[in-house]
Amino acid sequence: MMTQAQPDDPFVLFSRWLAEAEAGEPHDANAMALATARADGSPSVRMVLLKDVSDEGFVFYTNAESRKGEELTANPQAALLFHWKSLRRQIRIEGRVHPVKGAEADRYFASRGRGSQIGAWASLQSRPLPSREELERRTADFDKDFGGNAVPRPPHWYGWRLVPDAFEFWVDRRDRLHERYTYRRKSGSDEAWTQGMLYP
Image (cartoon, rainbow, N blue to C red; front, side, top):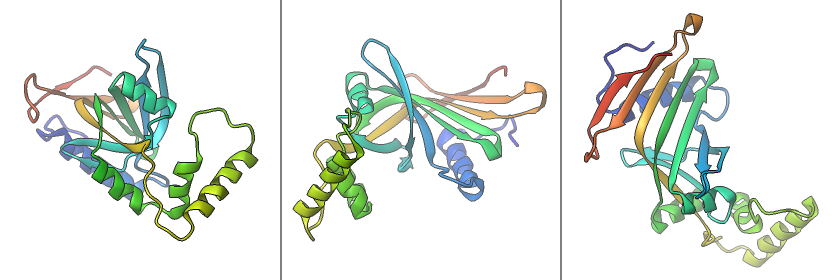
């Protein structure tokens, strides 16, 4: 249930909703749609996983040579959508995107399973794949090359942080009279937000 009296900070409300989703959603409460666009404005969207959230923004990881990586480099604006069907809620977030620092990416990469680490080297993400056997061969080759040693983070694999300028919190209601609450960052401020509501 939402009321008109919401926290001044949208991150507080986001954290509350995420915790409720983690307690109730059957799969991947941290899954989010990531929308990007090329420099000419052509859009694309795909699902990724939120790996960290703080007052600084929302972090996800990818191959910088993938389509989304290239689009984020060419046009560092993006949008996120969390949709929790069982809770009948969604959150839209829009903002600016920039790479995380190398040390932060290194720490997260080191926390991944070894198979996922090797997969980050083996996959030429978003490029044509001649056959599944080719991917399996590349994976086996990198596994052999690294042997029993720690797998370093590939230079083209790192994280992105979306720094939000706008949030919309949406709650399903009867007769399509949904609740829509907005936060927009005040001009010239990194912390203050203007709140509002939208017609459903």
